[in-house]
Image (cartoon, rainbow, N blue to C red; front, side):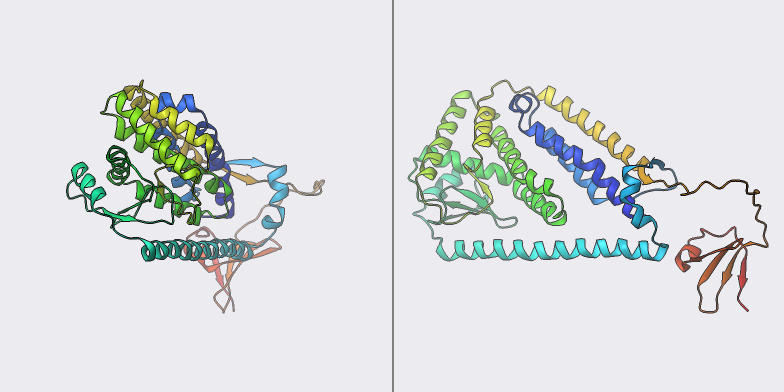
Length: 377
């Protein structure tokens, strides 16, 4: 069951976790000690919770707020059942329209960039292809050159292509670049980036997902670096670091003509993130056992958090404007507590002198099975 209250509660319990991710991502010491996987786990659980904004009245405990929340929801609470349902469907309609609009925008933007790349790209002399074949025989990855970008990057979900720049590199530097991009492909990082883009589109109204997008990209890059360098000595990491700095220096002195937001080898848009990536590469004290324990603990903690978030729900509560005094207690019997079925198929609930229109859906759900039904004559 989805209601406006369940949607609001979902936002209230999920946004603090998103803010926690923003804070933890900027703690370099934390990432170097515990890795970046636990950040991605937090993000995944938060996304799952946002995608399932339901409430389960059967076992939920209601948290009542008679002050701020009740004040904000007063107009909605005063609406009848049908109008509240209409308001909920209106909100969903606006949400879906936003998703469609952003999907069209990203499709046009990305499609236009891909068309420009394919029109201007060209094959090289086979040197890069030979190095890639040495790294990963029969990888199925295409190599193209383009003068529209200033850093190598990987594009493609089913047919991957590595776009190389015109920056002059040695065979060793090219090997590091290709190994990095091929590691992206092995780790299914293009799928992860696509998932992050989908979350921006689905939750277009939540600025935290847009704020976190660059952080998620950085986590993907740092995870790729660590996977690539894990089985190599420190000397290899230093040479790889020199290659990154070399490409970065060339990027600084070039005129960027096309901003393709993909898995770029180097990204200078975030100086803080770039420095954090360098520190992470040079960290030789990676404790995989500790990181595994932390990841398991985070999974268990997030699972408990998610179940708890479904157990509770925040709702407003209201009291009568005037206190009723000196009024005898009313007792309703079957004569003045019943459902009346109209000839047009609608239902009216009679409680003493009070009448309320009941929807046919609520009747079919069995919410009023205990009430006698009288046909209109």
